[in-house]
Image (tube, rainbow, N blue to C red; front, side, top):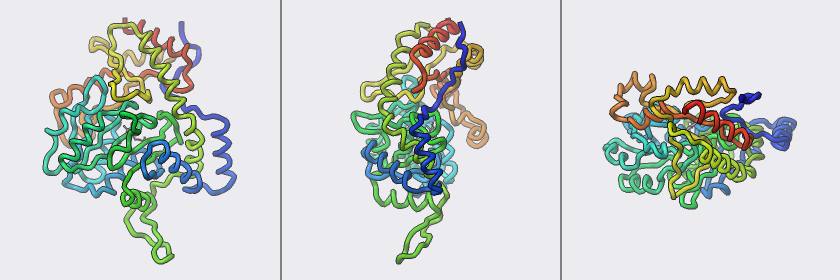
Amino acid sequence: MMSTTFIPLAKPDIQEQDIALVNEVLRSGMLVQGKYVGELETTFVRETGAAYASAVSNGTATLHLALVALGIKPGDEVIVPAFSYMATANVVELVGAKPVFVDIDLATFNIDVAKIESAITPQTKAIIPVHEFGLACDIEAIVNIANKHKLYVIEDAACALGAFYKGKHVGSFGDFGSFSLHPRKAISSGEGGVLITNNGQLDKMVKLLRNHGTDIIDGKMDFTAFGFNYRMTDFQAALVYSQMPRLQGGIRYKQELASIYFNEVTTNNVTLPHVPDYTTHTWQTFHILVDERIDRDALIVKFREKNIGVNYGAQCMPYMNSFQKKYKLHCETLFPNALKAYKQGLALPLYDLLTKEQTQYIANILNQLTA
Ligand SMILES: Cc1ncc(COP(=O)(O)O)c(C=O)c1O
């Protein structure tokens, strides 16, 4: 049996009230950073428990702003997991610093905390742990290491809005927490990102930097820092602000869908994701590992022939051309887990608009194709 309609890997749940709010902004003519950017920031403060939030143009800009605000510069090193979306390491290059890759734990796809300390050198200034696929990494242990070595922590929570670690929202442990609002995330503004912090001075710097350093001095507009245009438009802010009340309900529904995968995937040729005790999974991505005897790329094609959009989940960043050209790191020996996750990883559809029947169907197809 084949699904008659294509089941995409992800699809944002945009409802009529979201469109109505966007239309309200469009009709007002006030399109750039305005009322709804402020409302969205207030909502993020309430949702995450952080003291400050800044909405910006995307989740790469948030990370870039965090590094610039912390003064990370050429000659500095920043520790990043070897497995993530390229943005996590690209931003380190963008400020002229060096990303130092650390392998991941294959059970969680998050940074292997036991390998962080041996990567620290006198040049290390910060760690960017990623809460990969919406699962909190062991952030408490990472913050302890950072405090011991006087390092900054920028949590890359691009995929992890709504995720809690021991009852506290991710992103609020480090100096900064960074979220993406791309359409593959739990809620979406199209492109968009939010940066949270508990430090008022850092927040002020981020708000200056996102808007070319625009400031008021003696009642007059002036420019007090060299910044960017990383502003979010107000209709994007309205779009995602309107979805915020549905965030936790959406995560609960995705947890139900994930249980279907856990119960219905019976093939021995894949490894299902592991959820440690200290957290619950928000299932931004349901990421499995396919046995090495199975050609993962051919499997993706076979799924597409069955009208199902699956894909690989994230990159082994030092294995990609840009980083290979620059650092020539031997990933097979240095980052075997990240490489395996990149080569054998498979993201299955899991989102608010996916039905339970479709989830069951995908699980059955997976069983058939990997038998
Ligand atoms: C872990 C991680 N970091 C950063 C980003 C960048 O976010 P954006 O696409 O909003 O720039 C992403 C996007 O998917 C991501 O998955």
